[in-house]
Image 1 (cartoon, rainbow, N blue to C red):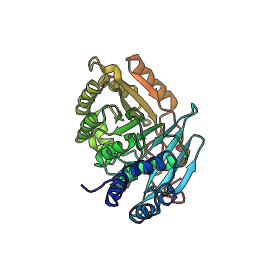
Image 2: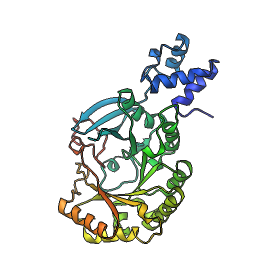
Image 3: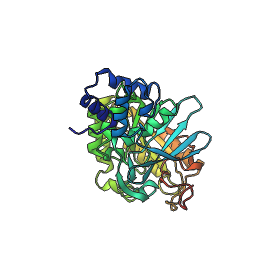
Image 4: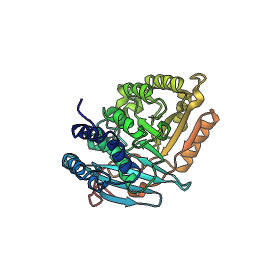
Length: 349
């Protein structure tokens, strides 16, 4: 079978050159323990092997190239160049408690057209490869940052990318990134086949369902995917997910002023989550203040009082709820703001 990641390609090269088995471990440790980002700098390898790696893979270990870096107090966003003259973005969030979280992309653009999402206005240009997904993290690792937690909440719908599961295998490989499943979150707009596969192959990975409206007609207007996978069908699948994995499921809910932030919406969200059985306490709602963009001018952020009332309604119904901390919006690093454009462009920061 043709290798689909650089790590498989390295193994293939080593086998073709009849190198001893420990060479692969040496290379992996050079990347992940010594943070060496160029094959030619791996001095523990014979020169002929280094030359072969460079000839077949290029000198740089990473397949993504940073083009623009922007920083705010607690967020940094990197615009990466990838093959085909395309661009994707990834974000590092620094929490005052002393840990870093990463929001990475799975696609260049997105084809599902959620009305309020800047990325959705781009359309889908292509899926990211296994290396392009994991190298976003590798870039931060090689820069000396610790990889405390990772979420697929950047550009694209992760469960629509057929390369996602191989990327998760690389990320959780103890000889490579070594991330525990519980430190990874996959966010989805509700693709049932992907949710089912995630449950089978990575049952301990955190799952987030992007709801954004509890009413099917409105959700279909905001998120056309709802016509294929309506709320009821997704909720039944999430019930099965919780029963099988014993893990929480998070309900993401972006607060759009005057559209989905009223008391009737809060009541309806609570109605979806109550009475689901002995596992209903494992549902947790994350309310997300909307981040405005030039690409989606028709949508505005809810005011604090409406958010407070929404929280009050949910709590009165016994629903676990958190209002997500908002930072990074000033550099367009917030949820729904990733557009993969240069800062000098009219539609960028």
